[in-house]
Length: 232
Image 1: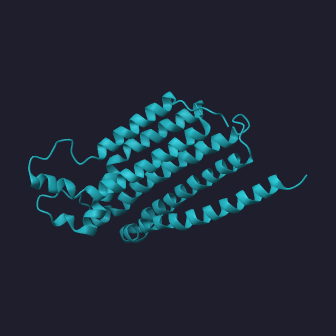
Image 2: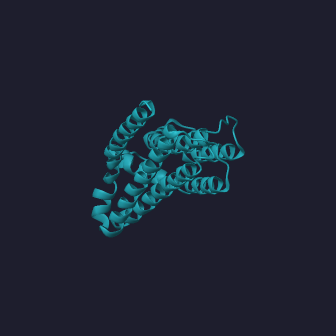
């Protein structure tokens, strides 16, 4: 694997874009002037925390990719550009979705002066289409980035374990994108009831998928280790 530790221009630009995306999540850039204004701002803490965690996960995946491979070829640059475009475009939809969910779950919509997102039942499928479209785009880009790294494994001098790690990451990101596709299709063809009852909760499949992938990765790594240490 190429041993490059300095931060490339594409990484620096990406970090700046992620930082700007987090800034867009902030409730308001203006400091509250009264306690009532502060309290209204604080009620969005949970939604902000979830959105921040999701953006941080995307940044972390991007960071790990560059730490592992340090690719700066045209394919990686184009895919990174697409990823950053999607991240910026989906900041407000992401904030809308989780503000709506948290407000409904915790009853923040009853707070005087609260600006709670509103949505009609008939609009629920379109909301899930928008959200799932972002999931599909982000994780499809990561799958393609790792696929590109795997194709260049000889150039990057990846050993067998590192090549296996690249394949695992392709499966990981492609699987998450597939769950997004399932949600999108349910929202599209299932109607408003399915959009709320199935298209959203289907993302809980991520847990079992991650467990199955972890189990597969462990067995594959053990088989590889056994092969490498076998005599002859």
